[in-house]
Image (cartoon, rainbow, N blue to C red; front, side):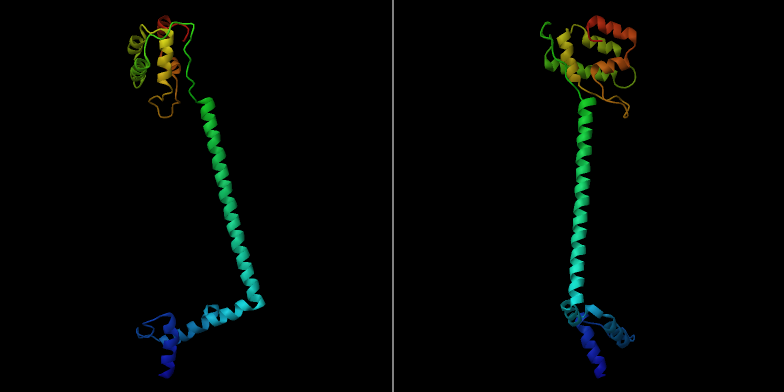
Length: 198
């Protein structure tokens, strides 16, 4: 019984309660556990760490940890640089090829006969007419009647770039929408209303 209490005390240090309460042969389990502990025993671990082999093992583990941190940092840097360059490339491509450049009003023509607010309303009405099924030519023609060339520039600038009903379609300017939606005879009517644009 004295051996049994000694094992209980040694095992009880790591597992505070219940090493012998389940009715199994815990004496053999505790004995085998003590044999398998190896470097988990603090006394053995201290002795091993102070030996030359232990110092070499500690140095190797620190070097491996430092190499792992360095490798991870270089991978993260590479991923961030790649993401930055890809993002800048997409931004530049969109600005160069898909960007909207507003038209300037011609200072040699009469000033615009509509305000910016009216131009915005007309741009919305024209877009609503062309968006969806049908091209809404009559509504577009009605909104452009009486507008001078500089007024059309304002409408064009307020229209900006807009996507069609197809989610895969590109964003287009007002002039590109006209070319996409209207037949040649309809474009001729618009050219008669606002010359030099279509």
